[in-house]
Amino acid sequence: MPKVIIPPPYRGPTQGTTEVDVDGGSVIECLEAVDHKFPGFLPLVVDQDGAVQRFAKLFLNGDQLDSDAALRTPVSSKDEVEVLAAIAGG
Image 1 (cartoon, helix red, strand yellow):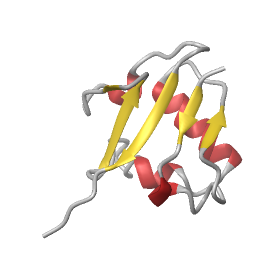
Image 2 (image 1 turned 90 degrees about the vertical axis):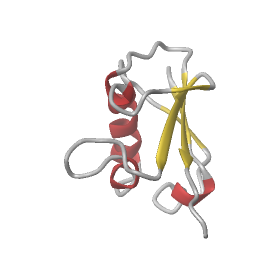
Image 3 (image 1 turned 90 degrees about the horizontal axis):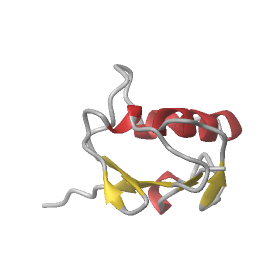
Image 4 (image 1 turned 60 degrees about the vertical axis):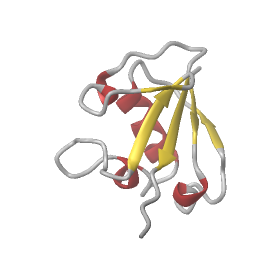
């Protein structure tokens, strides 16, 4: 079963949960499964047009995914999908 790692800025909807085991065959299916368990999570990561949010980065087993294809990337039962919040500052 794939695992989604949740960063601190996105743990509001997950009520502090840091890791969620999910069923899913792609990154988007895994993120949707987290949102099913914790409504409100998916909009933090995916925008209304179905693209990765500007300040979210996705990783699969520690490797950063290309933003354009990230959501369609296949995952297997032992994979870890990690969401990172890219923090901007000035």
